[in-house]
Amino acid sequence: MNNTIKTILVIEDDRFIGEMYVRSLVRAGYTVDWVVSGTQGYSAATTKQYDLILLDIMLPEAQGTDVLNQLRNDTEDKIPHSRVIILTNFEQDDESRLAMESRADGYLIKADITPRKLIEIIQQMNT
Image (cartoon, rainbow, N blue to C red; front, top):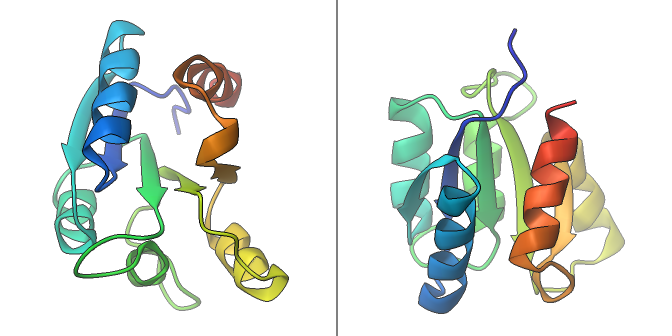
C-alpha cells in the first residue's frame, strides 16, 4: 500500500476552521474535499477513497465518534486505505479518548494545532 498522503477529506462544521485548514492544505499541495456534517462525512468517506480523513468530533447530524465507529469498528473497516486524525476542542474522558484512538491514527486538540503544525504532522505521516 502506498502511504503517501495526497487526498484529504476534512469533516469540520466550523466554517472558519474548515476554510483555514482547506486553504492551508491546498496551498501545501494536497487535494482536499470539505464537508460540514457527520452524515456528509460518512457518505464522502465511503464513496471516494481518501489518504487521510480529518474528523471533528462535535458535528451536526452525527457525532464524529459515531462516524468513526461506522467507518471502522470491531467487525469491519470501510476505509482500509485511509488514515484518520481526530480533531477536537472537546475534552474527552480517558475511556472515550482511548476508544477513539484505537480506531484513529491520531488525536489532536484543535486549540493546539496551527495549520502549519497540522501540515507538519501530515508530512511526518508520509515518512
